[in-house]
Length: 97
Image 1 (cartoon, rainbow, N blue to C red):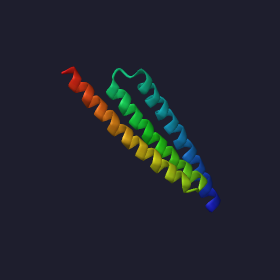
Image 2: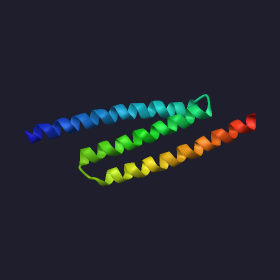
Image 3: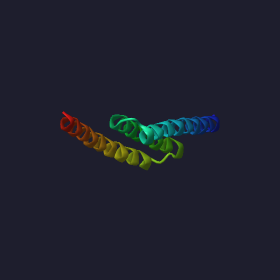
């Protein structure tokens, strides 16, 4: 019973990693070709979310909890980057007025 459950878990995590890879490609293309700064920052935030999800799925797949620590670090860095980019956008908006 556990062997079939492990096989199902491996297939499910592998398919979810493929889906996350596709969404990362879409976000990366938006980040590169985005029409404005706000679009690029939202794409970077999405890439951070995808990276955290990949870390969580890798932790499930391998059974190692260290990947969750890596995911937490990526989330914290992404949060700080979002705050910095928001301040940048606000400063740029004030300069335009």
